[in-house]
Image 1 (cartoon, rainbow, N blue to C red):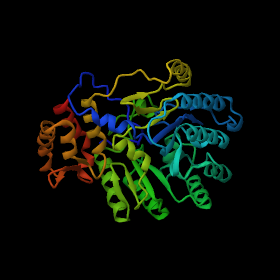
Image 2 (image 1 turned 90 degrees about the horizontal axis):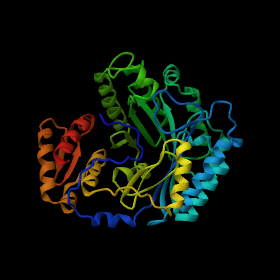
Image 3 (image 1 turned 180 degrees about the horizontal axis):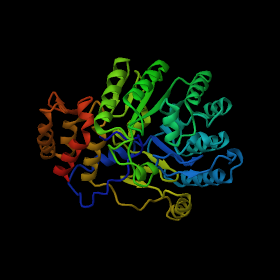
Length: 420
């Protein structure tokens, strides 16, 4: 399954993928950059499943006076200042991490002021912030809100204290309810909850309980991610996929189907492989990634897609700071290879098939030719009998829900093999 956390995609680095296509598609998008991702790397400690680029502060660090945070923000502001402004005013800004809710309000204000000064913002831009329960106060939340944050993504993960503890999470279930109460007190209506399935010792009953709890809470948006074992993490070193205490593959598939059934029956649209939303509450920022549009990225480990170049910044502060100095000496030029038409095609398939609406094959044909769409149709035809894919009106290709989404890895592997 491809059911991973929604983060900016890294470069494919397919090497040699030089298929001819309509390069004007990149020129068209060049003047349409209206989204920015900001990475705030600080965490109290690293969760046992996490391989994201973070900096651990420990439990005793006072964030308001932390020199590490102050230094990081100073360098981050320098990167923003020297980045060429390309395209329209920003419509979406996303603060990810890490734990962005460890960022003092005054620093958030400085970052948003710099972004507005450099790129300008549209009225009512979607400004999202990832927050963890037990890492912010009501006063702090209201400070973020005054600065401009109008959407919150809350990392609940599970509604069982023993599972949260086993994952290395610092919060407990009571903290989730307290965080939601803060959101309600602040009248922040646009918020999302994150859940993770396939966790150690997690049963199907545990997952059903978490889903029922979420349905009662009625967040406008919900993200359901399947645990991914990364080799460098404690979980990756301790566990093997499908072996106890992890749920087996059949159980995790049942978890996915159960979430789809319960949430869609409760009024949530399953608009992306891992994401559900009530009407009008789809995450505008993440749709930039899934539609393979351009975006700025700032901060340690952040990915960006600008000027037809995908680039991921160094993953440690020790490497990120000198990189910013070099970026300044280069006059804001990344100096990395441009995305080829072949890579753009594969990225469009990989990202677009995550969406319920799928892909417009007629548009792909216009960009890359009928030979390419003929190959795509030939590959997916083998999966139509299994009811994993569908093509509406001969043009719109999408994966079926939930079975096509469950087997998206298999489908994409076949497409990549044929088109690479």
